Length: 297
Image 1 (spheres, helix red, strand yellow):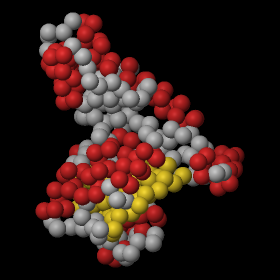
Image 2 (cartoon, helix red, strand yellow; image 1 turned 180 degrees about the horizontal axis):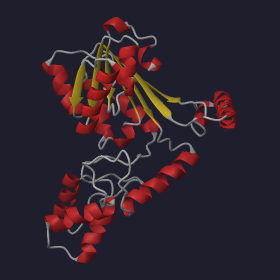
Image 3 (cartoon, one colour; image 1 turned 90 degrees about the vertical axis):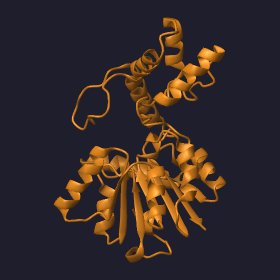
Image 4 (cartoon, helix red, strand yellow; image 1 turned 120 degrees about the vertical axis):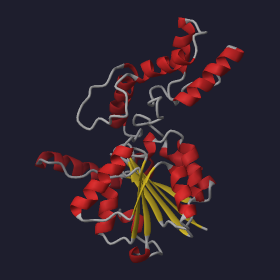
């Protein structure tokens, strides 16, 4: 939150902040507690949009605007209401966005004379421990059914992503052999259902696919395109924003204190090491990365 406000030319009593992919609404509620004038909460899940309404009422912190949708929904709202934005912030959101390059390019269209983006992600592939853990998770969700545990969103299927893709293909056409179905199912990892259908049509016409996964384990829910902790190169994301005119930097995150003293000690040692390391090596120990961008129009 500090990065969203520090050094911004617009003061918080005239400030508009967008909590993108707000989830439980922690950023939105904190922003209102800090006295930010206008807070726009946005999330693609209707359950989360209803949850933040309940939480804000319980805490007596009124969220100014709640939007259930994505970047296009936000752009439409801002245009219709002639609203300018000062900062868009999120944490653990960008790694779930289906078309992240497209999303970043659309950020330039957000109205606001002095626009700041602060996107944090714990899917830090530069940290080998985090990368190994997340890749194990990718493989689990790709090939295994999920358990119905606390926090499960009712709109999501419990089936493996691989099985869901196979069902999308077989429900769409019965003109493929079992072997062809398996080939297309395997090669369309990371695609949403509409794009899977396009690949099926291309295969029927040409006998080939013009898509293949560009990462060994990254995978998404084919029903909605929600990536499972997608491992991304933050410097590539920063370059996309720079191409749109944003002054962009990639920052390293720091470890928070643990619940017991020895974990707190270890994390503080890690933070000290991060401070001392050369810039290129900081992310190898950091728990998360931040993309920090500014654009003056």
